[in-house]
Length: 329
Ligand code: BG6
Image 1 (cartoon, protein in one colour):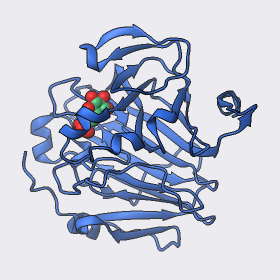
Image 2 (cartoon, rainbow, N blue to C red; image 1 turned 45 degrees about the horizontal axis):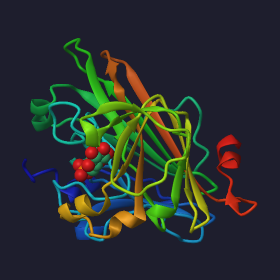
Image 3 (spheres, rainbow, N blue to C red; image 1 turned 135 degrees about the vertical axis):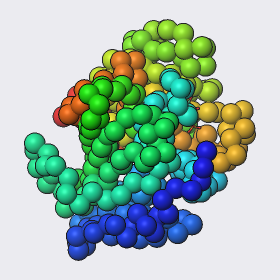
Image 4 (tube, helix red, strand yellow; image 1 turned 90 degrees about the horizontal axis):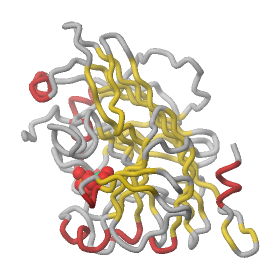
């Protein structure tokens, strides 16, 4: 694959960000352009135009909530290891395209005039990015589309990502895609982490030739490599970090599946852009649409939304109480 993508400076020069204390265009690693969003109470997030890739999400105490590898390369066309890569138009190896599709290694631009959302965004800290196919892209995936991503920070520091994909084909042809927000959460110690909300669900195990299994009744815990695609998952999933006394809550809409991934020690060592021990401090839980690919006719639009919040875990007789998190709105 060619590394001659649109230079980031060219992408940035076409950006006309409104003057705002909440939204800033800055230079990231290797001079790549990034947008920094800041919310009044102190939370922040950063998104690179390269891949529309969120690489940081900090709470109002300045604590980083996402995992990004110390060995992440920030060198196109290699995707950035960590944060929130966008998998589009193909999740994983579920099709003929490169692993996880190409959206994560294209230069996106700021969308200065996005179509309005049906419900207004109350946040002032947000940015709209857009990806349209280049001529080269159309040779790989012969479709015309507009992919709009809104990244927004809520007043309480919640991180909201909304994807809108529109079929703009003029040849009358529909297209089909799979999708994921490949979120890498930062955790203190993977062996102290539990995931609530996926019990008793069916899943495909990527480590066992995508064979179909059904999960046990208990919360997920981790003691070895995991790479599973849970099907028809609830709209809310919780990740409880016992040591940090922190719970991440993922709320999602339009994304029925959820991938859970941790490479563990052997695979970690085999990845050039991932530290040998870093698997202990990350967990991917990915809101996705994989089992039933999305089909859009010309003019149709799909929307997929993920909202992340990080809340202190409540204690109940010395035990973290996930039910409170899952039941609260
Ligand atoms: C996960 C997949 O979503 O991403 C795994 O389920 C894959 O199979 C992992 O190994 C990382 O993919 P990549 O392309 O970023 O190394």
